[in-house]
Length: 381
Image (cartoon, rainbow, N blue to C red; front, side, top):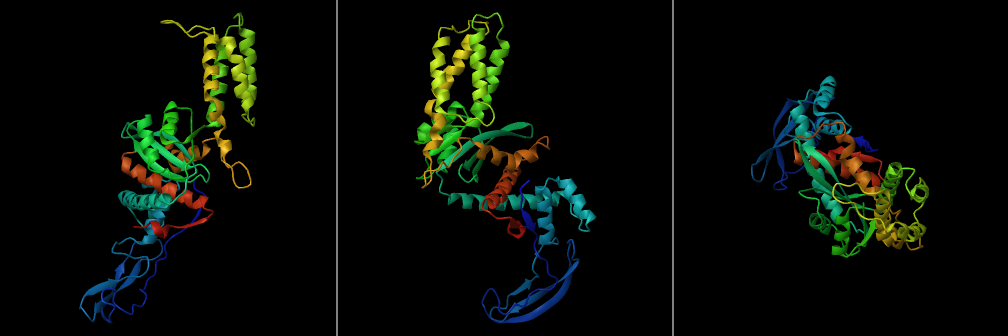
């Protein structure tokens, strides 16, 4: 849930005075005045004023603040949007507003949330277009829409944590990821942070960016991998003591709170020759423990200095600006949609899902700018 306080639009019962017509900037003649019903949490009846322009004779309606042509007030629409963003379903939001004396169908709630999401998408993309990005984080996740899995790509500013781009992809290959990232990088872009998928390495090289492997992903993967190797190694194995010693050392070095240093890379280079003689498994055979150790250490050596690319990004005082993890992208995925999606079995529309993701991204970016309050009147279309 986004930690923001929200304000709802104000609804007046009387229209404010109008001095001149909006069409010709001429004088006005009061043409007609009447009362009309309004569905709102507090107000039930408002007054609208009809005017006639003295210059062109055009007539128009002047309504109170918070009132439009719709029979529902802007405050009610904003309350429906807020309730849905806080975790209520369309039907639960409809029942809540009905209990407050403002009946609203769940289809109307859906329409108001969609309209707010569509507007938020434009506002979010407009704000993201002006960002100067030095380090970017990219990650993907999967949403299920009508039983079909859609790949969702999230790109963030790794320094501020702001969400820059949200898109659905047809494939998760290097070409598609590169095309997605190419639309947001700028002349100052220097580093791409990602998990250990090989496609991101190709993307970084193709765009001329330095590649930083997420240390959090790497540490978790190595701990799980070494634990499985140690578990599958029988005690009577000739290299059992060596494998146990190396796996225990690796797990200790990757423990919580431990920093990844060049010492790990040097250790992997030193220990790799011990397992280089392991042969690959044949058809139908299972890989031997020493061959699995060979693959793990070879991969760790191949990571090389890509584990420490984040150290090249420093401020004017020489302090590190990045922590070497892709946590910014992980948080963005969680805050913008995954927390809500876990409560649901799926969604019925990819467009409505994307609108909702942009809506949450807009609110989260507003919070990361240092604000604690948001006026929902800007999202009521």
